[in-house]
Image 1: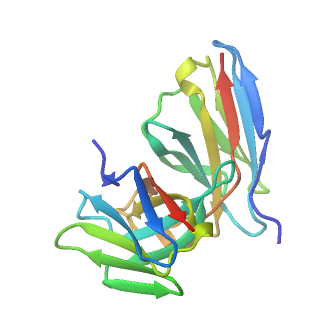
Image 2 (image 1 turned 45 degrees about the vertical axis):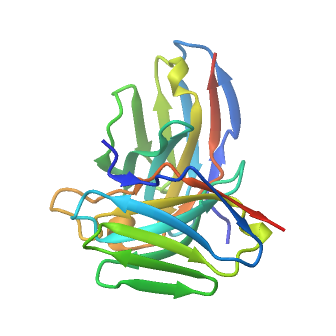
Length: 117
Length: 115
């Protein structure tokens, strides 16, 4: 049973346009969400995170939106650049973990973004 | 400062053998987590160590084990290898773990192929 779902395995966008990557989760206890980017043959790199007390976090070209009622978050990249082409993973965590559990990251299966020049 | 270092980067093993992978976290980081990445399942959490103690574990069989040393370096071991264990194994480190809200940093991974 997947707790974090990225329903689009791939996305193709023209350079300069907006890329929107979506992520859904099922566990309402998740309260901390992260996005990672992964290039082939490299480990994932942290991009941006958001706490459940916020609905938006922005860092340069990257903005993450959180809709808790819909259990949905999205990553917006504006403007998209060819160097953004990578696999993007959404992850969720229990930041303030239940006693006895220190929590861990639950990842989606990733969305491969291709930005065409 | 140096990043998370994993060794070996690539290895091939035969079914039934065992393998040990090593991870050196970023200096000052006490939490080390291990993940398995496969095309079909994405990134899946294996276990987390903090101050030499395993404090969380994912849904993997007992063939997967790990440990952490006093210098925070960690090893994971897979015994009685199966073909399905072929994957990229990623190590991640942070100061105190994800539950503390710390950013975690990944190594480049160890590619294991079981034949």
